[in-house]
Image (cartoon, rainbow, N blue to C red):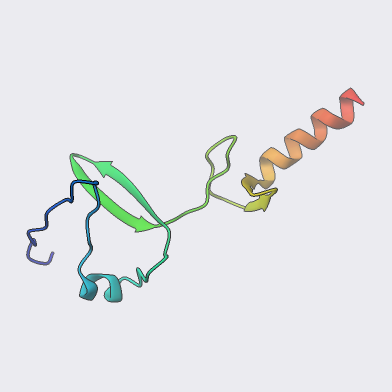
Length: 84
């Protein structure tokens, strides 16, 4: 692991990732990222689209601006088909 770097969080809560780290991990300007906490450590990783219904990340597509997985689409299709 690389040597830790001292960074200060701004009053508005922003934190700048050093340019060399952004380049190394392809975090270019405008790149969406996910921030999670694991064992008290902040983890920044490339954004993974997740289904708005089940939070799954496999076979996720966009529908009217929302991420929805194929499994949930199939379940909704079945429900609509049986109620109609």
